[in-house]
Length: 359
Image (cartoon, rainbow, N blue to C red):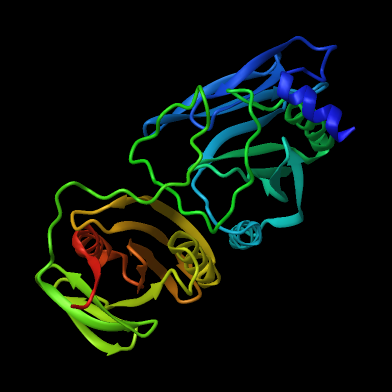
């Protein structure tokens, strides 16, 4: 049965022969599927690309279900993804009923079923991440009143049976040990999804920050270089604190080697997830994509603003990767008034920071 479904999906066959269907193409992730023509679709702008939302009529009621088709960057283990889903919904006081994986085109689709109350209506949602070895992964979210959810989810599974890549090939399952080349700008993938295997790119011209701190990482002497105005404190082995005159709280920094530690983006994802329990609610979250800075160091960050047990929390986790080494940076503050000034200083640091072996 699984082979039959797989072959039908590759050929683009619909399992909803009794209902007229149309074809939807997600050009950035490089996938297509068939959906009932009774569903209406809208698109909303998302940076250089689009997020698509299907409105699904529910028989015998004026309510609607909804299917969101989006993309997200994730390159770590399946367990870590499911843990992040669990912790994020706990913060929102929503119940994660079940987590599982389901094969689609030979690749796991990682699902979380969530129940919650939406303005007095019992509501259920399923979030699915298509765990492909691509820069941005397909992210699906199906939402419906709980009373109609089983029927909607059945139709959703019929859609998954028609999933195929736009080039007709089969996707690969992700491998967190494979280094990704990060694109600065999203490009459509009508011919083939962008499978990542190459090394990171660097800018053609580089700056060399003047402030140098000596550290020891995996028995090697390594220099962390920073722009003028920054100074270090509590330097010990591979850890230190960084300060700057306009910064209200010091930054804690640790350096690692990829030879005996997690890949840099995996480490950043784990670090960010480890602090989720500090938040009761998160009102703002902003992830910056990995990009090479002026010094040739690939940097990325996660910013969150929310509430904890003691009031406001502003948090940042950041990563900088260069050669065989990377750093992880953490910032915590409880005063939103100084957040913008602090962020400006941290952003300027990330634009020039670099790592090199000591001479």
